[in-house]
Length: 68
Image (cartoon, rainbow, N blue to C red):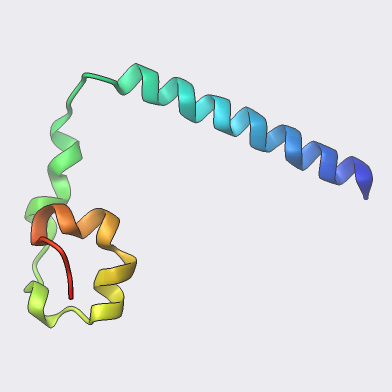
């Protein structure tokens, strides 16, 4: 069991480093795909349940503003 936990911890560190490197590569760059969700949102914000808006705020607030 100890080996499994050590392997998991190592994998987490590798994943974190990969994310750090990816962020560095993206800094200062823009892609049209970063705004693809803007035109994909068809449901009027007022019809989306508050709990759903809260869970998806990190994606939706940019386009719909702060939820209730």
